[in-house]
Image: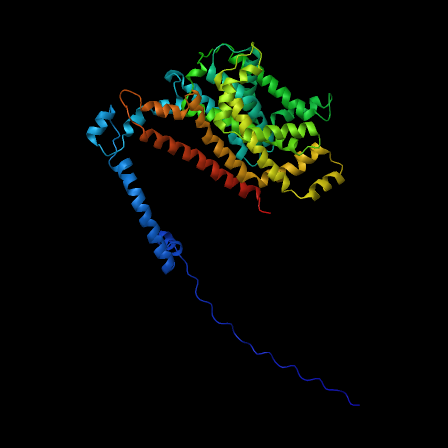
Length: 447
């Protein structure tokens, strides 16, 4: 048979694709409006309808709060004479200092500003990228800063131990910023210069011992410098306003997570006593409103302590709020733990990790990332719920706002103070919400 001839391959014809439409590029504010609000007929109609509704709703409020408002006056009657249909912001401006600081003496309010300023300065290094020991900074802030803040806010004769811890807080803050300056200038941290000397004592713990030695030396210097400083005592009964609200909510926010983690782990425990004790606390606290917990703490909590221990009303409220926040946080943590696959537990066991190592090194870091929106939502709710302490007699920002209406010069001024504190709460809660979104993007919680 002759050789079979293969058919010649047909030449592929080039078929050009149709030209794509030109890219529509929008620049400036006008282009943004066209793209997002007026991109089509239905989108344009919907935009017009929404803005018309907003105009109808906001026009009376803007006329009352801005256009016809009175900003300068000495009494509410004078406000009504100037503009009877407008808001009387003059009363809120006169009471603004009390809304923020409560009945704290005016000449001593610098101590509050200094205390919160130190707290802000303490937390600022957490945003630095070169700093590695951020967890230690946060833990030391929780442990040491309350003693320093209490020493500033309360004043008076404090115990020697309280003075030492307050000095250690200032020393740690000073050492932290010295280390930051050394790191960003290319040098070693302060404690690393002592490590070669302490390696002879303990090779494994030389780094820890060197930092503790630096902290003790700086604490001694700070204590020697401020030994003659005496702060005037300000009773807790004088605390109030936004200052008191932030203190209560800060304790609740800081303590809610550790209490919630312990209760959530206890509820999942295989030991019956711990499991049912955790379940009892969680279900009992979550089944009653917060105001009931506050009343119970004020009336019944002193019965569980010896007569030698005298708890003030603020301490009782803080304990009750922390337990209430921890019980709700426990269910949030439990939901996050249940979202972790079982394979993570098995993998941790396969490499020889124990229960606590598995939880704190493998499981909880993953669960907390997933729980960030729920955790921040709980924090926002707790910050707003602290206004209930006004019912039991603490002069927080809500009770101070109510007192404006019974002032003889501003009698009957109800709406303006409530609008003002609503705006304050909105700023704080919106800031917390935006930070949680930033934290989610930073940690890349998408799974």
